[in-house]
Length: 94
Image (cartoon, rainbow, N blue to C red; front, side, top):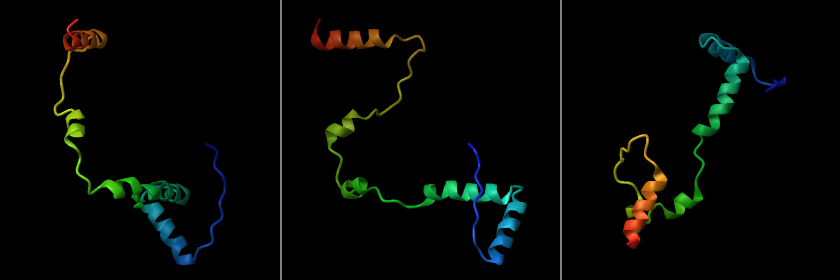
């Protein structure tokens, strides 16, 4: 990705602090700024409105039954189509 110049207007103390922080971390002020800007959205607390709406609701038992309760270790050479066929054959009595 190509870089583009950006001019910022800040007080002298902020510039000195940025240079000190960059020097202590062995990076340029530009890289320090980039890192700060890229990490800021991850730290912000944006609300998920759907989660907020339903977070107090109990999860129905039928949904809980859909989740895998334990990891099943299968050999690497398992043919999943054969497993599916065997399952459906047994389920529907074919």
